[in-house]
Length: 206
Image: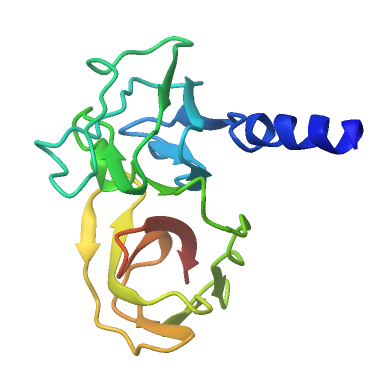
């Protein structure tokens, strides 16, 4: 009986334990790799901490309400800076948060999404299967296996961050994106989901 009482007393403290999630920050505006947050989509529990760690380039974290009015609350670290800086933020309000880097041109590829789940809900924390592009290299069409994701927009960027086109596509678990008119080279396919999640995927066009 004493053991059971001890376990019950300890349970709330176990459930409220914080987890620290690390996001790598890097990339350059005019060179490869392109500016990025990795991972650029996180699912966490309210009370968890996200720690951004800069590994290359000049970046910041801007999730202010002015820029993203649908965020449950705003967050912001500082003006873009280089060097090996880190910054942490504790998310205490459930909801979906979006953020970006403010360096010129970086928001074309450097965006992030944080999904904060309520701590009293039963949540399965698992990563969705990775989006897979094929064939490689692509010739006439590029196919993207997106699984159950609902993609609402596709954009193709040059490797220097320039937007090349926003092609139409067939909506299904396999997106079919026309690339016939692209010149031979390397590109980035940026996909936006209905929930606001944005991911970027490199591909080669022959």
